[in-house]
Image 1: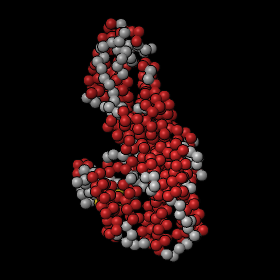
Image 2: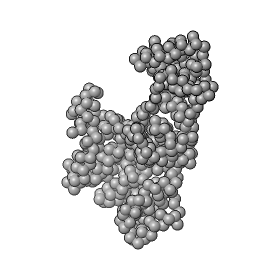
Image 3: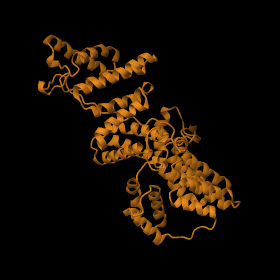
Image 4: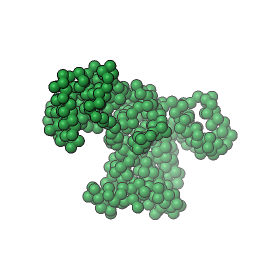
Length: 474
């Protein structure tokens, strides 16, 4: 089963690094000292002999000016003198730790010597551990260490190590977790869940905690709203696709996410059946309050005679009960048994929609949509779906914003254009999607920076892997 889940989901989401959201660093003058009783266990300037204090204070000032100029090689010896003599400085400032980390990251990035890289990476960890010793705040500092290892020193840091650092921070802070760890943690969490490296229970616990944190961060942000917006564009769409692993999210998750759609459309069978399937898939008890309402609405408004064909009956029964894998199996069996092009195309397309909306496997959804389109020429709906698959891949093929997330609009619009060219019946919908997504295409400056011109052929990678035409937002 684990192997099947891996094949089902992992091919869909190619590895991509979520957008870096750098933590803020507060800087204050070094000379303003705090009372001795408020000082931690590390040496401070006030504890040094007068002559040593003056020299160390001077080292702090001189190295800091050089760091601001990115003159790290000259700054480093003075930073070492300041840091190792009085690591706690005046008992309040902490930028000496950030500056040390900044320099070691620079040295790491500018050497090919694996031994030096390992040494620089270990020094970064040592600095963060010293910061905890001096000032505490372990949950925040572990998050910072995990952040730097993930984005800057991944070659010498395992996902397991980084995951444990993030998890330690999150276990302490809960839904008040720091915004800068959310995206990389969501990426590692997703990969571990898909690969079966952690239990469904652990994956579901932390996925829901992240989603709660994002919701709270978006609602309560003040000066960090732009950062939370980036997080919101990336983490929730990625974690939503863990719904493809049955049992990872509990009934309450599905109720919170989908039940409102039923309340908004209490007599609409499409809405009723959708919410019914979701809650059934989540194995909600039939006497659970919200599910009981949906069941009653389905009985009242949506009872239909079962199909006559036995395989088709099995397919619909499996689909309505949230057993999507067997639904796909039976629908495909039925489609392959028919010579009638309309029926064959209809049920292949239905399989595509199940893979898109329920199982969350975009490559499989494209495969069956294309099969439906191939056997029924001049039918635009499959291409509309493929376009939506591509357009929805911004948070999957990139960080949710920026170049890698924007270029997916090109093949998406290609599909919408193809749909309306071959099928006038879908022209209105195709134009709606084109107008929606063309505003998200890269800007002229974006393609200029990459030495690309409008009209050039460009291959979009990720799972899409299609040639398209370069265009810019109007």
